[in-house]
Image 1 (cartoon, rainbow, N blue to C red):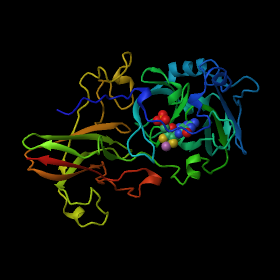
Image 2: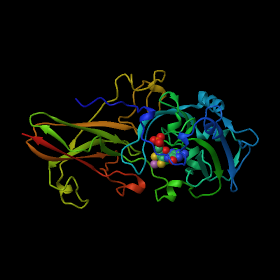
Image 3: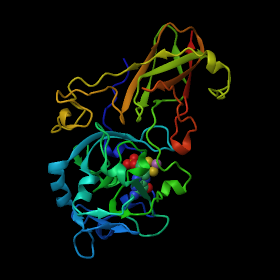
Image 4: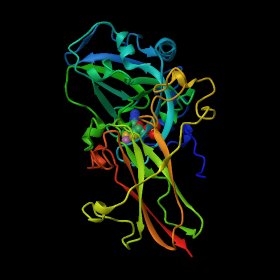
Amino acid sequence: MPDQRPFLTHPEDFSDVSRGKPIPHTLKGAALVSARLTPGTWRLEIEALEGAKIDKPRCLADKTALDLPALLALGEKHGVKFLKAMQCNNIALPLGQGLWEGVPLRVLLGATGKMSNVRRVYYWGFHNNDPAQMFRSSLAINQVLDTPPGELPPFVAYRLNGQPIPLERGGPVRMVVPWAHGFKSIKWLQNIVLTNDYHTNDTYALQNNDPESYLKTAAYLDDREATTHRAGKPVVIQGTAMVGWPGLDRVEYWLRPESGTHGVLADDDPAWQTAVWLPCTIEPPPSDWGGGLPDDVKPSQVWGFGPDGKPKEWPMRFSVALWSAKLEGLKPGGYEFRVRTVDKNGFAQPEPRPFGQRSGLNGIQCKQFLVMG
Ligand SMILES: Nc1nc2c(c(=O)[nH]1)N[C@H]1C(S)=C(S)[C@@H](COP(=O)(O)O)O[C@H]1N2
Ligand SMILES: [Mo]
């Protein structure tokens, strides 16, 4: 049996990707209060600049900035719940998977009256205007206001796994952009600016990343270290698959004798053409979601689940799928194990966006192991 793996990551166990000097989540006491990063001091400003207009901006100066009770009250009525694996486009393995709750950004903008001449939404979190601290992101206005049926819009989140979002994960309030790599999901959110400017202002774009990169479907190994096994006993290899916007049809593996190149195989190596890919097993949905979701959350309230409490598709988009492969009857010797996803459009990893890092790492991973006689 593969090891039991938790469906949700404990907020403290996420891998952290945070800029800043000091990093906002290291602030304490008075510094935290003056940064407005406590539940009582947190405020969100919503303004229009560069030719865009809104009737009722929400500003600190005239005390109209949104506070946490007002956000939570909007959540009572318009709240959404969403399972998302946070993933950085520059780090293969997803950082952690959470149940995020919040209010669609569209709803917050609705509370600022009539808007005109808006083309983009810029937003950022706490920073002190020191360039080393700055981390900004943006969305086209249509991505905020229109949502394809069955999809979720970007939302302003205040809860993770049923609890207030801890400071380490960007609390009290964080943006969550369902389809996007992590850099769109701004932590310590405090400023939203509607603009007529059509350019992205994403800090990540300045660092040579695709500023619109959305989550890719790709499989990852839990452990890439070489291991040793005894002949006669099955070898179980497991890992996760990120389910990006194109969905996940299946996960498959290719096992071959070790070729003496330490698991390195050039993209144009002819061996890829004759590779035999066999199916991996994908773990089914937890039968009762006990231990999966927080106590007071019913699956039917979560995006992607039907009224019957069952996921509409499995594995779910924007979550990770857990896969395993049980290899039996292996003769003594060295082996190379590779794994890939095939998405719902029939593209096998690393297609259809094989160029990696700048738009999301998704290279095919290899694990080597030895079977001893
Ligand atoms: N304010 C702010 N938000 C941020 C970042 C940051 O440095 N500052 N990093 C982003 C990036 S690049 C990623 S991948 C995710 C990481 O989220 P996590 O630290 O909760 O895992 O947060 C995003 N939001
Ligand atoms: Mo990132």
